[in-house]
Amino acid sequence: MITKNNIHLLFDFLKKQKKTRNLKISQKNNNFEISKSSYTDDIIINKDVIFNCEIDKSLKEIALIVIPLLMKYKKFFIAQLGQSLDGKIALFNGNSHYINSPKSILYLHALRCICDGLLVGVNTVINDNPLLTTRNMKGSSPMRIIIDPSLKLTNRLNIFKDGNKNIVFTQKDSNKKLNNTTIYKLPKKNFTKSVHQKIINLNFNYILVEGGATTISNFLEKELLDIMQFIIAPIIIGSGIDSIKLKSISSLKNALRPKSHLYKLGDEMIASLEF
Image (tube, rainbow, N blue to C red; front, side, top):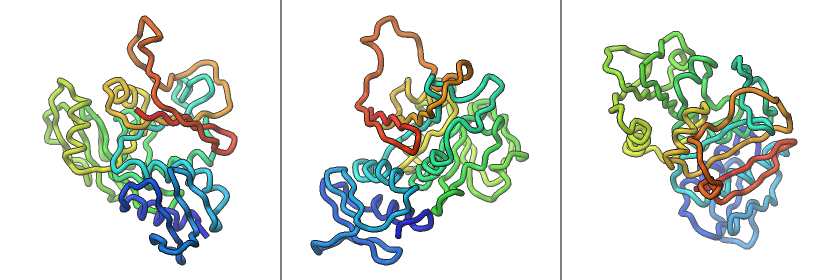
């Protein structure tokens, strides 16, 4: 049975395969292999996934979203935002717990599980003091990558206390030492693009851009994302912090209209955009 304790093995296996239109996989205990027989437990054909083996009900919808991405992309920058129907990610006082459901949190951890880098802005780290690990699903936690232009981070924050490695990108010259962290100074001009290129140069393959709204908006506006996903909860907040903040346009002809897929995730919906 595929559960939260072994689905990461399937994800890791798929990441190592060549991207082909047709791939048949069989499961043996907790291991997966390419099947040469006519019988398969998991069949992936033309991005459609058919499960003939038993899979935990809470994971099936998640797997049907994640597996086609792994089949299509050898590398990607994927951004994810959880929001209300009216596009709010938090109240003006910063409260955001919890707009989305526990299943969406599990999905977020599945994305963390498949990525080798997790990118956030400094305000997300300071305001939420998160761990940014894969806790709800077994698998390796991604390297935490923080954009901190003014180098405001301190060792009092959780990400510097658990021994996991971090990368910080800044514009500031400083002798500051952060636990388990490599600090890279990049030029202020074209800073976001420089961060993107440096991550590529450091040989990361799958990057999750998790927040906040400003960081994701910067990557989106500069066309640095391959995939953008909105996890939309069936609630209306009415006022609060917008999920995306882009420059004003004068005509809807200039609006972004990427290829899109809609997925059901429990009582919520995921709008997945590919650029």
